[in-house]
Every structure is written in structure tokens, then in C-alpha cells.
Length: 426
Image 1 (spheres, helix red, strand yellow):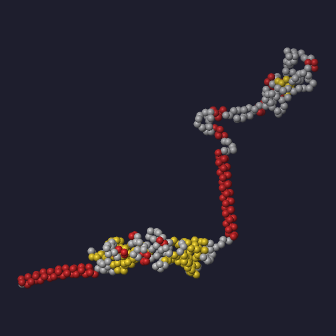
Image 2: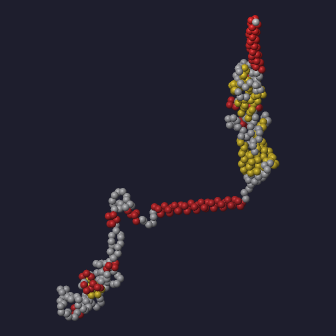
Image 3: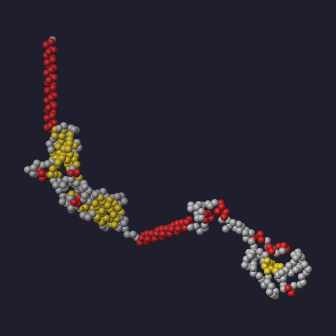
């Protein structure tokens, strides 16, 4: 029994050793198979437009941890036997299945050789190469911009040249570049009617023989005959043509412009005079306000003030009394020889005149008033001293006597002086 157990142990050890060697052989064979079966990328293709270049390829292997390297060199370097070519790396260990060569500014008339290899876990494939000439292989792009402008009953087509990657005109690379212009009349259902073509190298082209007030659509294509390159057509641009303007419409525009100018001038003039009157009425009013004379005290303080003290305001007003002229009394003195004998009680004075002692007696006093009813004179005026002459009375003159010097019996002949008293402010 012991012997059987020892044989069984030896058998297990031998089986384990065989399995180990078998796994090691399988790993070695698999590694060699992967290295032998790692193929380079396939179907190298250049995607180009003007001076934009992109190299793309296909990879059909199941491994996902794969990187690619892309290099390029000028073809003339490969022909040199004295120097080995210097390859320039465009993309290094990238997982993308394309490489952009635009940024390297490849010479447009040059010829280049491109190559790509795959790298999986340190195992590299062989190089796959492709020859590329931009002038021959690069695609020509359509015009960068197309615009339509009305030109009466015609249309002007403004074409902008295709642009390089540095925004320069492609005419630098294609001196004989020209355009194929396709235009047609657009119907109501947007269908093309009567398609026509026009070839031109100019950037501004006038489409002839168009109908007035009709919609037309235009599409442009770039052409170069050296390698027979043609771009795609641009998207259609549509515009309606114009026609001759009728005379009544021109006259209406003229009249409308005149009316507008007249209204503008009228409003401007009215606004100017309104502003002028407003400013003048504000700064220079026709009626001075009462308080304007108190705005500045010229004799007092140096600072202007609106109100003055009460004493100043009281001094500016005063009570004025207007009185009628005192009546002037005229005394008629007859000559001595015409006088009757004086009654007893009268004595002549030193001036040769008689005075009545008793003023209350009856008889004519010989005193009468010439003061008038409505005409008033100021006392002591120059008019009161002018006496009136009475014809046939000789050398005697009339005397003027003030009322306050007369006898009390004559006070009843005076006019009431209180009737002319009024108050007035100055």
C-alpha cells in the first residue's frame, strides 16, 4: 500500500511539470504568432480640400491597445544615394486612425512620401507608404462666398476665391482658376426653369437678359483645367430682379420728400421761436414784479437780500394829502370921491383905507370870491398873485387876501377842503 502511495505522488509531480511546460510553450508560440501576424495599417487615404490635408487608414485587428506613428519626407530625398532620408514625424503613438498634416505647410507643388506603422505592446508592424502630391491630389474647393446684388433688371454675382488654410486666395496655386456659374428662374413651387450656364474668370459677373421683377437662383463651381479639377457647387442664392421705375412713382417720391423737408423746417422754425419767446419772457419779463427792487440792497450790506427791514419798507411809503387850491378873495376899493360919507364909528387908517369895526353889520362888504367852482389852485402859487383889473376903477388894483386873514363872517363862502384828501404811496 505504501508503494502505491509513492507512485501516486510521483505521478502528480510529473503531471504538474508537464502542465507548466505546456503553458510556457503555449505563451511562447502565441507571442511569436502575434509578432508574425501584426500587419501594418491598410487603405491609406488622403482627405484634402485646397491646402487642408488629412491622412487616414484602416485597422482590422482585434487588439484595442494599438498606437500609430505617421512620418513624411520629400520624395527627392529618397533618390539620394549619398544621404539617408530624414523622416519628419507628424503623429507619434496616437490611437487615432488619422493624422492631420495641414499644420506642416507642405509645398503645394512638391511630392511627398507618407508612411504609417502600428505598435502593439512594443511589437511594431511594418511601414505602409503612400505618395502624395498636393497640386495633383488635393481637391479644389468651391468659392468661399457668393453674393448677389441687383443691377436694374439684371443681377451681379460677386464671387470670392477659395481660400487656403492661411486664408489666402487659391489663385496663388491655380493661376488659371475660373468659375462655372449656373443660374435659373425660380418658379412658385421652387422648381428650376430654363437653367443657363456662364463661364467667367472674373470675380464680379453680370447675368444678362433677365426678366424684370423675377426671382433667380445662382450656384457657382470652381474649375481648373490643368488636372481637370472641379469643385462642388455652392448652395443656391436667390434674389429678385428689379425693373424700370415708373414716372409717377418718381414724382411721388419727389413730392413726399418736399413735404417732409417743409414739415421739418416748419417744426424747426416754430420750435426756435417758441424757445426764444420762452427764454425772453423768463429772463426779461415785460412786467416787473414788486419784489424785484428789493433783490439787492445797494446801500446796505454787500450780500443780496430779498426782504428789507420793516423800517425800510415803512420809509418807502408815505401819506400824501391832495388839497384843492384855496379860493382867492378880491376886494374892490372905489375911489375916495365916489365913497359916501363914512358912518360914525369908522376911522380911516394910515393907508387911507376905511376898516369896518363891526363886521356883523348889514350891508355890502365889497368882498367877492373869484376862486371858481371846480378849478383848484395851490396856496402861495404864482397864479394866486395875479390880480384881475376892473374897467373904470382908475389906479386902484384888486387885492388878494388869504382866507385865514379874512373875517369870520366870510368863512361860509370857503369850499370844504377835506374833499380832496387822499392817501397815496410813492
